[in-house]
Length: 299
Image (cartoon, rainbow, N blue to C red):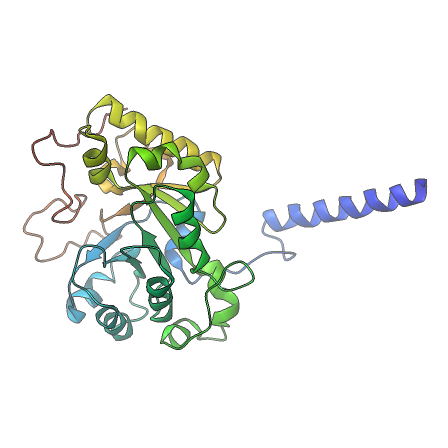
């Protein structure tokens, strides 16, 4: 009995030692850096920002992609089609910004198309419950952790280069982002964030104001944001907000990492911005009409 117990303790100690070595960056269990550079930055505790692509424009896309962490291909509210996004990704597949798509839903049809054309992240809006979050995660990665099926498309030829096995590395590089945009989603935030395969939970700031009826500078609105932040971190996931105005100067800024739009990595600004605030939401997603504009509280 004593010999058996000693053996178990020895094995446990060895496993703990290996885990500690991996955490310290040792050879045992250490993983190479991700080719999803936006996800790599998130895991390093850094903030990431995007530009929003709403129309088919290969030259414009390829230029903007040089300057940001990821691309927010907008397919929830724009008329972009998968073939449009496919062509833009193919034109400059390693320009810099990691391709991600905001889809209109969490259906298998849309997520399979998105991943097959080469995106390394999906953003699923209006997640009110665990079921929608589970669907988002279910179709976003290969078995055994999820249910993405093997198909054609250009994804393998884009990311399976320089000796990289795309099928074996994709799951680690995939980024599943869900948006909480209503009080119902806030109430279920911890369960949503706890879904295996969900990597990031962000607040859809404008719709949260619309669905709650609270202006973004209302204390009740700020309480909703704080609950989502607390629940997301408690679940061990990454927290963010769609409105990059919340990236600095707000009580939640220190914990928020993932944003839509915001500053480029090198100070570049789109030539057609017309002086528009680069931290602002894209047209159509500004602050709720008729309500006070968001004024993040200073620390």
